[in-house]
Length: 137
Image (cartoon, rainbow, N blue to C red; front, side):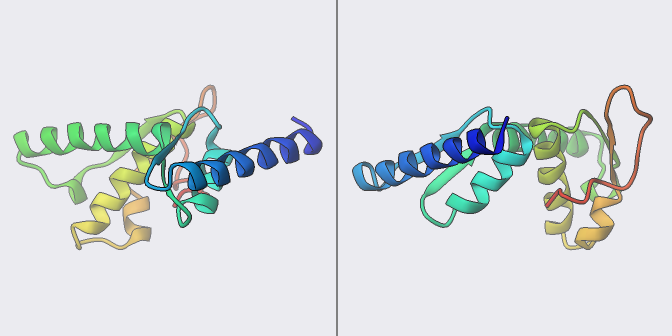
């Protein structure tokens, strides 16, 4: 997309968000299909202005984290002892990694940097790489 098209999209989103804030001040805005870069950027811009979330980044991430927690509990394992390989570094994959990393840190046993070292991405057709991408977090 061109810079002009990016600016038009940003202007549209800004107008839309301001309208939502005015007309429905207690609403929750659900961002969908903006791609990883724009999804993160939009959340950073608007999360302090109104309740909002991105389904790919946060929704998929939290549901997957619930499944990981259940599997760890049944296996009698702790999250800080697990390692994760994420196949795909799109919005959903990075969101899953974010939720997992944040849960490991919340357990209080590892720092943000240590928890990041538990996650690897596999982006086709490249080989597995480590550490987690620098834009995560």
